Image (tube, rainbow, N blue to C red; front, side, top):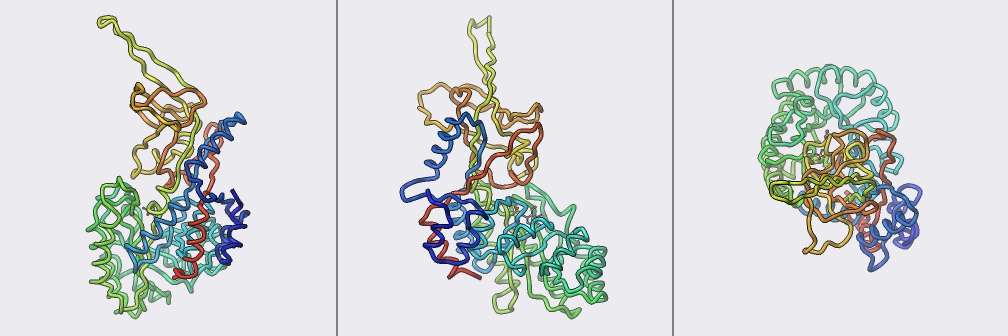
Length: 440
Ligand SMILES: Cc1ncc(COP(=O)(O)O)c(C=O)c1O
């Protein structure tokens, strides 16, 4: 394994060298022939030999690169502005930055993080409609000009502290078919749009576009068509009031998982058609999106050790037999990396599996898997049927990249999982080439 900085020098691509420098991201490189599983195996061996019962997350940057490629193929007209709130690991941001994406930041510290990795302010949208004044001032001071709004009060606030901002009017979208709904909290209704645009004009503010978010974990592609049609309507009203409209932001809501009810490609097809109908390429409107889950979810795998267990034996005296239920206690749980179970409606269950190879003939036991804290809601999985596991064994959990590490806590003082970003040398070099050719 080499430090990424060394490989980046070989690739001689300046942007990759900067964003992936070891001090920025601490990325591990897989030499030819080594796989992500090899990395996990070695890390478990290393930690076990040191008696170190520390959970860790592996960020598979090869998978991230593939997701980016899939996006470019599926939604060629839509430039992703990755939603930092979903997973703020510097290596994730660094890779996406090298690939040419923009970033959706929701606060001063998210903007600070993106800027610290060398992202230029024109590649950031401050996509929060209810912003603290100090954060708007930070945006102004650092050249982050594009920001969303959905109320009169926000317009007045922005006119006082960032009068040159380029404003994007967020409208409410139908989120009934999304796991995580947002429209009860954010987004102007269509009937409010005229008043908002008129006030913006009176305040001499510049409105340049429209945004929406259909809710996270959206399962109905047609809501994008309706939201894009609504955005067209708002564009037309804004143009009539004299605004030069040039940005459409179709938000987030996509899943990249293969087992998600609706495939990303099905959404893309509907979106591409709607864009061609309502925002054809020749009208010069830039189209962006704010995907979070799509990029981050499948990229992370959690490795967590069994730190304790209880075997509950029940005896059936009538039948003269007994059964065992296993209770396993991990060193990570819902107050830690598995926080998605509490905070992310689009990720209601997870599927833990054993790190070791499992023979099909091994007996399975009904098992409950708990997190380490003293709270009984700290339950990672119920009613799993898995082979027997011992203290010191490791459990793996896939798809742990979305709304996990950004909402975990230090409850009970348990250590947060260490994050190991990993990339193959091959992907790094290909991505390096891509930064030269795909920079949008
Ligand atoms: C304004 C905004 N943009 C983007 C996102 C990212 O959404 P997703 O992870 O569903 O793509 C969210 C998520 O809550 C959001 O609130």
